[in-house]
Image (cartoon, rainbow, N blue to C red; front, side, top):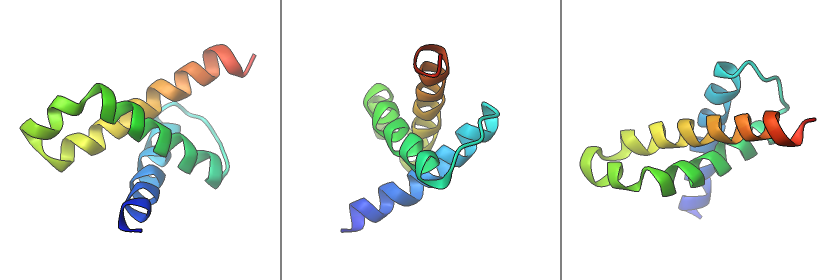
Length: 79
């Protein structure tokens, strides 16, 4: 249960920051979804940073993953 709550909180924060950086206006559920998927993508891509820098790198990876997901969504899906 703790991991799920952690993913929702981190996903909400990362999704919020990513949608503001990319200037995308979405509802709360979409923002959290973007953040959670971005955290998964960023976690897979930037896994090595977790061992080097700790939890902060996980948050950075989540934001970068969310930014990548928004870019893919705007480029390929939204048309």
